[in-house]
Picture 1 (tube, one colour):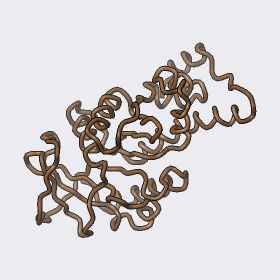
Picture 2 (cartoon, helix red, strand yellow):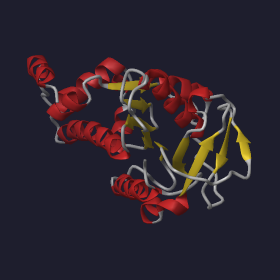
Picture 3 (cartoon, rainbow, N blue to C red):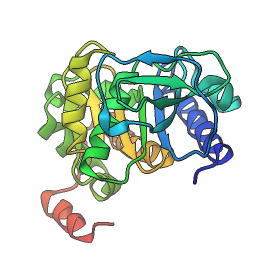
Picture 4 (tube, rainbow, N blue to C red):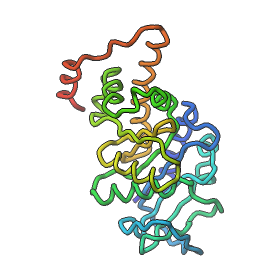
Length: 253
């Protein structure tokens, strides 16, 4: 059974890290965590959802509040996040938290991702969306708006990337944020990858905890950063060879 104190501590830590990295300008970025809370709060009102998520019926989530800043969440997580419970038919939600704020505008994308996770029976409970500067910069280069080329670059820049993200990143061409189209594309990407990169926008990651989600983004950003540092020095990075990458694949975790 989760405790709100433990979860809010992790929320505060990860929100602070996202802000300190410069990946959450203004109110950019959002996250959600599926939790097992013991609560007897009776919801006062149900809010309809545009889509139905029967797999999430009666599930409880802690999710970023609409328009809330990561730097504020890091200081006061309970005041800047929302606790919601999905209705018994999966087509509505109610707010359990006291603060009168709405969930993030990316709510549908988060719920679609969690629904996919439950359907496939894996252990991820956390989802993070952040504007990872280094990864966004890569998608400004047409060559790397190709999933194969993108991953070959990231894997070759640093051994940690192929060891901790062996399946690579899923690439999602630009679509309007908050739309059903981008939610559907993100689901397809995250069904095969632990990180989905939105062209010229940011990235989503999934993990068992928020810390796990942050780690994945941090590792991918490190590889992208190494590429840019070498490029700024006027040298195209040599990168790990295919033989070296194959040896690392054998090592695994």
